[in-house]
Image (cartoon, rainbow, N blue to C red; front, side, top):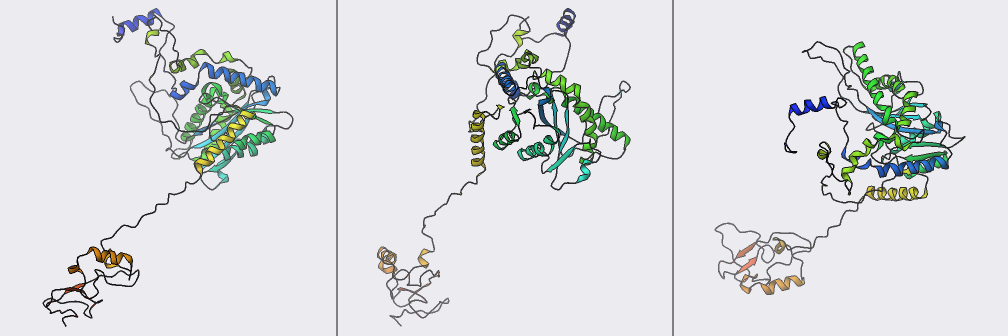
Length: 443
């Protein structure tokens, strides 16, 4: 059998019998950019820098001072949970219409303590009824799109994070992803003033390095959908909207971001206790096909079907802000933040419109608008034949007033057949059909 031919069902059945430990499963979706960035080299450098920061601030044995902040979006249209039904029948579940996204900002420590949720509602005018039924200690704000940005993130730190986390006695390490809405020079300066050390996780690796993504937000979404389904059953005919999100998600937040989930998430991410080997090799395996030096092909049947290289599409290079990760208080990161701030300022600066100067172009009606006694008149008169000039003023265009646009009418003398300007060189203003006209010389 050739290696490129499809496998027969009989071969697959025999393969399962010979390997009972192999099972059929659905692979987890992984974007191309995450597969590229989650490499062994990136993770090794990340753990080295994180270990330096923990040693510098004496936080290796202080799980209560290691925090993680992350955000997730909540939709009013929930995904129904699995139910039991008779074989051959199709079950239905009533859900709400898709509405605007409400952002939930969560925070938890390696010791298992979580900060109450913080909500970012879409809209322009704040309504206190949005927080009805929310978990005690919860807070929120209003933003046009309902998504977090740099100002909202800083507001969360000042008005919510500092109320629940003590940063006066000892420094606090905050881990978060390097989204452009989070990292800026103002945030780094704010951290210096409030004894907070910000550490940016490597870009596009939050699915293995961020504790809240690793083991908390998944259960949170599952509990949230269950609470939405319970609400729909208890309130038939009603729909979920943004006024119900805080009350429903508060219960799911307390279950998903629980103490046990936080402790296990920080452990699985290798942050506390510090352990690089907690992230398995399978997490970095997809990045191997994007490396320049690919490993030699194996002779086994399944390894020969692995993808070992990938073609790169040509993209147009453009100058983008530098990627920032690690300790924001280090001098090198401060320089990068300043550079990114200047690039952002230059990009947002209004561009000056180009001034277009049009040079004068001769017009078809230019002969009807002439300035008196101009040099161009004499030049035009010299170029025009004598028989085409006016027999009175000896010019092609009459001497009209400056900046005046007027239609010049001509009249031909019935006696000498010469042409002359009407209205300017003769008292006659217009000629009627079949009427007799004589120039001043013949009259």
